[in-house]
Image (cartoon, rainbow, N blue to C red; front, side, top):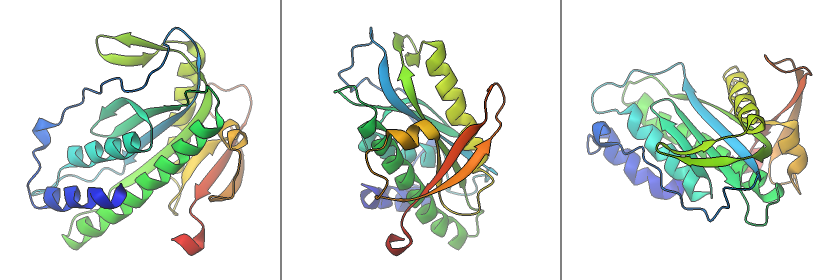
Length: 223
């Protein structure tokens, strides 16, 4: 899917994409029972050190492509804006293992796509776009509103806040990685698909206990 999106970026770089036509309405494509809590992983991806779009370059175009990658990996996009993408990953069998795996796979695909995009930007003399990604895992309740699906339970909103805080931590990382919560790490059936580093415990605002954070990267031989 990432390779298929390259054509989009090439067209966007040369002006074929109109950022003003970006459609942020996201249809419900998952067969979920919204009356029940859903074990899920939340992905929060945000751009930082924001690069001003110049010439034919469109920041909104990048964000639309990022949400497309998330959807391709089974994610349900809850929010998309010119500087962030928020997505939920859940399984029909209501287990967390595959949800966490899908969220991480999507996150690393986002990292790959941004790296590829930055090659074009730098070659054109434009600054790179930087991406911070955080993933948390727990139980979420959703509700359908006039603005689309939203998280409706306090525990789910706390998970979303944690994913955002982890994403903020990821801004300080000089290497391509996604940061995940300890619950996300322990929800995985296998850790062999990636290289994982335990970054230790971090005190985050509004948390009574220090949070253990892990960095997930592709294995060096696959980079």
